[in-house]
Image 1 (cartoon, rainbow, N blue to C red):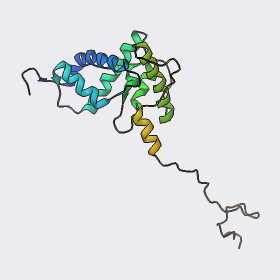
Image 2 (image 1 turned 45 degrees about the vertical axis):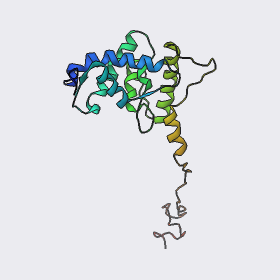
Image 3 (image 1 turned 90 degrees about the vertical axis):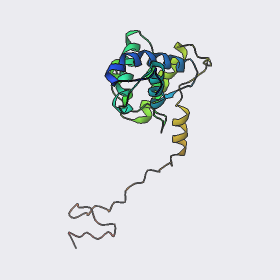
Image 4 (image 1 turned 120 degrees about the vertical axis):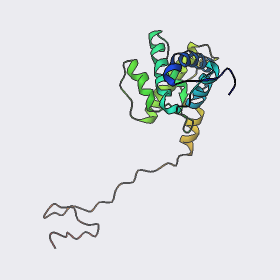
Length: 183
């Protein structure tokens, strides 16, 4: 630990981290199609503030991201937290519901629909914070989210095998076609 690093509780650091998180996210928004992972954001706010914590990131990153959502809303800005994604799948995840709540929208249960909403918000961020965005740009999933989706095997919907209905007792018959009730 250098002499300029201090270990504190997340509660003490949160106001300082929020300032740095906003700056990091504005910088990210300035690069078209850029995103940042939760862990990268956590590391960067601690590095910039020189305020570190031994508390697990999962215990405090949600509160930090929530603070940024509120700042963006008060300033009538697009939600910078749409740029924060999970390292493993490149998606915003259920925490994005805070954006929807603050902006007066209903939570989105379907992960692809939530990610599509976040992609549109990211495009707004890139435009708002001066990224070099093509005039015909469309919302896109993060590179990692596209990679994960392309690798995921396509599963065909399989119709469950069902037996016919017995014309006498109206019970489902085994696939053999012989009603166990009526035989």
